Length: 209
Image 1 (tube, rainbow, N blue to C red):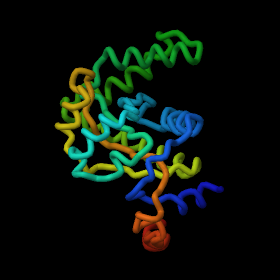
Image 2 (cartoon, rainbow, N blue to C red; image 1 turned 90 degrees about the vertical axis):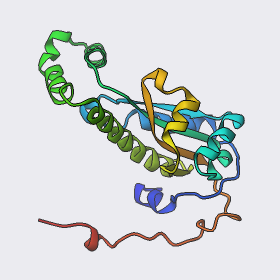
Image 3 (cartoon, one colour; image 1 turned 120 degrees about the horizontal axis):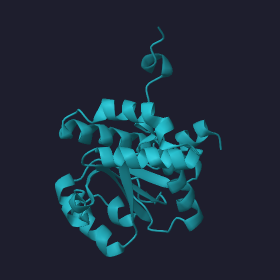
Image 4 (cartoon, rainbow, N blue to C red; image 1 turned 30 degrees about the vertical axis):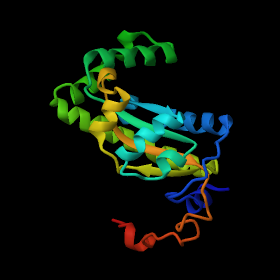
């Protein structure tokens, strides 16, 4: 399918069958997330992939009882950095240098741009910036899932502090931002499976200047 066809096919799946998404499709989905855009390319987040049924059962009440939490094949947690430090920026600059065959000294201006933009912000502002980058990754994940014919549900409806505690995210320097349930739609029990997609017309959404 084309990207437009894939986006037309996908919807926020309310009920899933519990059937497993193949390892090949999951690898492709995670690779798409890895390749997602982010500010400066910094990728200030981690993706936790949860298959364990017992752990998903503990997450369900934190997610206000949403059935996708336990009916999904995999539950992905997008967790952003709690802070952005010189150490993290230096590690990223080293990665750029290693990947592109450059010296770190050649990337001084790039490092300065990142540090100048981010390090002077209050910690809460850096947390919020990192969370916004996780939203970019979620957008990529949703489009990729559609292309791969994986049903998905983006989930903001959960109690972050409780999820952070359950998963031990504070010790990792992370905080939960979003979850993505992926699996196979249970069309027989999902009232949204046959519902017509509702979106504003392009002329009502796009402003040409």
